[in-house]
Image (cartoon, rainbow, N blue to C red; front, side, top):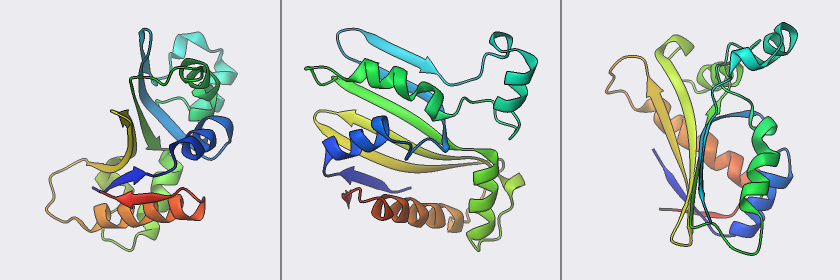
Amino acid sequence: MKAFYMKDQKYFMNRLLKSDLFDHFLLAEATVHGAVSYQIDGHINRDFYDADELAELTEAGSAYLPFFHLRPILFELIRGKHTPLYFKFVFLLSPSNAEKTIRSSGTGFSPDDISGIFLNLTFRDGQMILTTGVSYRTFTTDNSFDAAWDTFAARFLTNHGLDFDIC
């Protein structure tokens, strides 16, 4: 697990909430504390959608809604003249992106070994930190995929001009 301190928070938030940069991630959960507190569970409510919509949303086998569906809502919760006191977003790679990432990592892991590949964004006390995380289906002492995911995440940030320091 690596923690990345985001140096230019305004630019990062513009890329997060006003562009499609993070749209290929799923949103597992979001919390925003401002004038009131909001908690969003990213699980898809299957009963809300008709069969065709649900098939399209879950074709990759995910139980979570893609971030782009929730981005406008989160933008409305965060924008304004007051900065939120706190927020946290838990992003998850889609099953297809997770499979590609695992296979390209060059580690001995397969998609069956890993249940989730995460980016956790937290804003607290004026600091914005993005941390990586991996959830395994079974116990392992092999940290090679964690290191590979840390490298992939750092490359993603760098390639998109998101300036950071490693905490």
